[in-house]
Image (cartoon, rainbow, N blue to C red):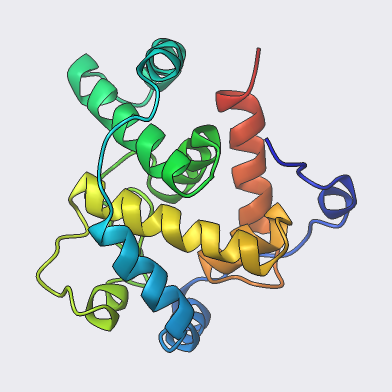
Length: 194
């Protein structure tokens, strides 16, 4: 896992943006042509695990951890397989993606935020229009995770892998720290604990 940045954690403060400020931040993201290109490429990339053995080991561990959020074992396995692939496809730790999902939607794939974000990773619907895929459904697990992981990877690259600011950008609360603190806490307590 990339360093979480001790200096960042000691500087965490603030309140997560909701309502109008989140909508304003979302509107400012609409015209980023590089992110639009990455999302288009993500939607068109292939599916599947690169290494079956590693995926199975990971699935066994994460299946138990996810059981407190999702009762159905088949649903858990399918979600974990998709998270694992979509995260590793863009060089993200799958555990980080699980922490983001926990904070964003509580693993409710039909979640809708006050700002209108949709699904597990709370992706804003305008992204579908921006890449000419308005017929895609953000409540579909693969579509949501593919777009969410691509967006998060983009923000990590933009922030030189500094997790705190990248998470704040993802949440539309850049410059604030409440959201990154929540994700980092979920990551450490639920997905990386020994």
